[in-house]
Length: 296
Length: 282
Image 1 (spheres, rainbow over the protein chains, first blue to last red):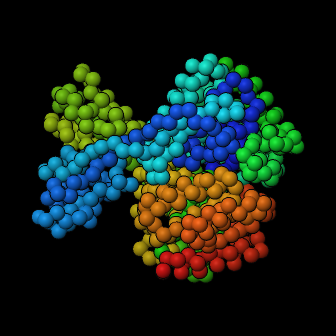
Image 2: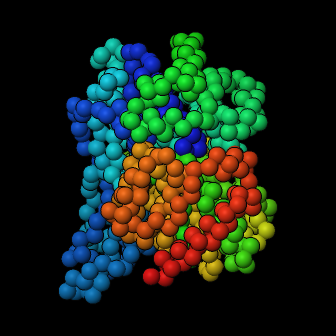
Image 3: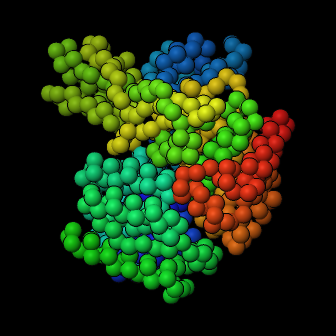
């Protein structure tokens, strides 16, 4: 199961930490690789670290650059500028901006003096860890690192391998906001997407885009409404919209400062409280588990 | 002046600040363009309610193989780093959704058997919200690549006046694409454990791009002063602090501008603009 939301900040990670405390026999995976937060609550002990290399990047060796500009002319990503260091023969050379380079290799092909090098570099790392709630597979994309979709796939497949090895039933994935590359990579092969919606017009708009994405890939979806009392009218509108499309509502969670308190203590809400929010989270987990069992 | 509103964590208040600042400045007769670069989840339109006057498809050029000319030599497949074109000996297969549009396959084909055809992956809508010029990018459902849409939005940056760019959350390519070339990046953070952690990641990313930046803290309250302490230690200016107030969240939930109804919000936007302007000048 992958927990998603479209809009950021609706409570995906808070929900996943609660499920981590409540579910049995599971592996956890944090697929929000460019802003991973699950480890902040699960305080893992890392067992294995592996380097991640995203994609190749071009680099111009200034001494070999003749300044002809064929690379810049053919680069469709605006990644090559005429502002590199001089090399004795010419005062300025061409230079690749590594943050703009797509790693396509067209510049290498067109350079008449073979001035370009094309190599993989480090873009982050990923980990297999142990936590108080079971194994966790997670990652850290380097700032501005490339190809987060590929890193998400490594985390997802790494977690699947741990589940198989330890004979665990459930792979519980914390996803990223949006509906693009990392989200698409995280939902491959999943049985259920749980959408966490907040009752705001923005939350509703982005949940509808997420629902269109899950429909596009034919993945079953369920929805829970977080901070539900913030705007009960929008909460009801979201529920009606979901019901009309056969999307199961697995519960409402109230707007409650206990979420911030729990974060401060590096715990999930269900570990530190037994109030309305904790009760709602337990109910949401039971409904979600029932939904998963029905799919199986 | 190009100002980007960004954040590592989602839902910290980028759109609230970006749309309210746009509205307050436009009321004072500044020339303002709002550009929604959060193309996976664009929400600025909910608050600015623009009248859209034009829509254009964003396309990337993808290969089409002329089977009659193709000799199955396989150069295209060897060249393609995205595995978007594969030669299997008896046939050439293309996977347009993986294609980044670099044009390399057509360039290396010795038979000139590949031509490029445009493929839509999203759209850019333009219009106006009163005096505010409005530009929005929108990624098509099921498409993975948002940076080409962001580049298409940024082609409509105004030559003069104030451009306010609403960035996607995170620290990877879409966020980097949005902040490149900005005069200033305002990182919107919330004072929670997650908020602080993701702020530090966003600062690392912005420093790599090398753009001046500062922080706005949203929902200042019981979450602690970790963000303030981090900013002081890292020499990052704090340009604005907005207190935690459920009423602001409720106004936001209805898709309304807080500067129109929440006492003091418009003054916060004015103060923010003054600090942004002096930060850009220095």
